[in-house]
Amino acid sequence: MDFEIIGPLRDVETIAAGRAIRELPRLRRRHGRGRWRKRKAIARVLLQDATVHTAEVHWYEAHGIGRREMKIKFPLLD
Image 1 (spheres, rainbow, N blue to C red):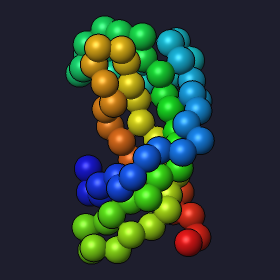
Image 2 (cartoon, helix red, strand yellow):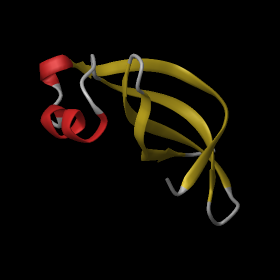
Image 3 (tube, rainbow, N blue to C red):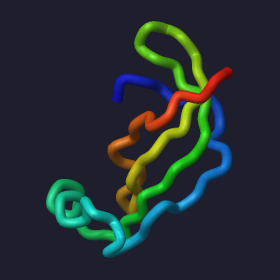
């Protein structure tokens, strides 16, 4: 991860769940079986260059496994 989340996640939504996730076989191989969901939210992020931005963040999560593979999809205007 080349960024750090600062503060709470806002407007959290599930984009896809279960078999609707294209990456499901890879997620299960790498992180284990679970009820996987692809989620998104708005968050303040601290980038490696020490700047702070608001961005849309996407990740995968499963109960008992937690959040995995977080990435910034869309930096939003501050």
